[in-house]
Amino acid sequence: MRRLNKKGFTLVEIMIVVAIIGLLAVIAIPNFVRARTTAQQNACFNNMRQIDSGKQQWALETRQSGTPTPSTANVGDYVRGGYPNCPASGTYTINDVNTAPSCSQHGALPAGY
Image 1 (tube, rainbow, N blue to C red):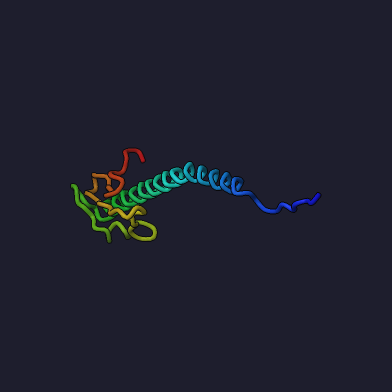
Image 2 (cartoon, helix red, strand yellow):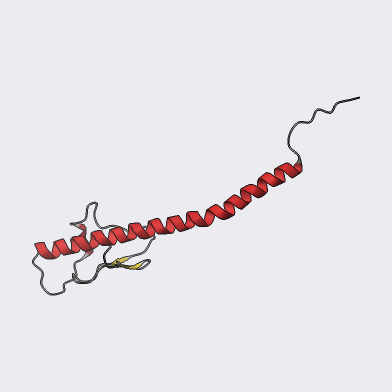
């Protein structure tokens, strides 16, 4: 009798492995997208918090009364690293001293953030 030397994988085995990898990708990709969106939103809220702090410091140091609106240069002087950019490619609106800043992508800074 002659023995066959069997090496490698069969087509069925390869197809099963590809199907398992595809199933894992279908499960993992939405989670990665959701995690990226959440990270961008948190970074955006932190940037808006820094803008609000810079705006308040500017108002105190320049003795502003009423509801003046500082420029990005005024706020950038009081924020470490300068005026921040939105991680989701949005634009920040500084608003007046008594109003929280907002972002075109994530809305206004939530109360208590």
